[in-house]
Image 1 (tube, one colour):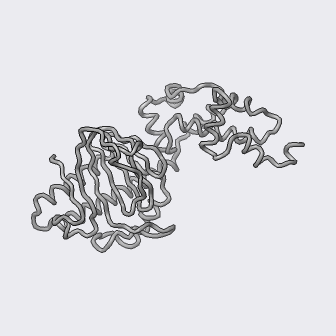
Image 2 (image 1 turned 90 degrees about the vertical axis):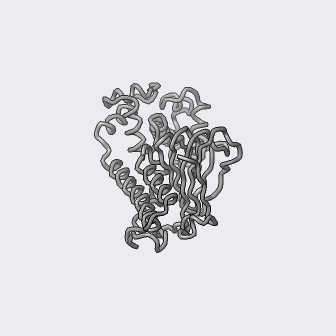
Image 3 (image 1 turned 135 degrees about the horizontal axis):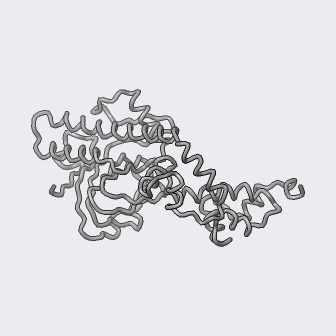
Length: 299
């Protein structure tokens, strides 16, 4: 597929005032400063065709691979990990959309055939979901490729067809969110037992291989399931368990912070302090001072 780049002022978009940009870009060299972090003023969809992209969405770091779709809401911060566009091929579309209010609907315009109720439901789902990247969502790539063909050929009914495809893209994202939320509600018993096992021996330096073996899965399948159910990679999932257990132990004034660090699986008190502050905003000693009541200290 040839590269293309359509902006709002292009004649191809005159019939689509709601489409601000539509592009397919093959990047053969790293372009420094080409994807600086900025607050978005519209609804963005990015689909990775090939390559590997390091992006930040709302201060969260994501690595995207072929078949992955990223969605960035208006008001959210987005940019390259190092303000650059990596080598690879990416397709994107930007849609006019006012910033979503706390309970606001997805106000995408009269071009859409989605009902007000559906737009409100989808808007709420996007607001409350932490899911910014949908892995291996190749249907999104097919939709964007079909939109491109419609723009190129401009056969009879192409305006209606492109708007229909935009609806399909939004519906696809909404249904993926629904499946993601259902998966989290149906957290398998095997993972509950896994967490119990990890908490029972947090001082052990668990590897992804060992955790996967505990639930009878290969590393790849295990990593995907943990990401789908918790939103974290297996190691970050484990770190969160370590920190949650440390929070309990820090309320016991009789236990030294260095001992807590080793008991919950950190290799040093410095590593523990750095990770703890990153996730809570406090150092362990600051947390203990702020959250342990005087009565607890003398108990």
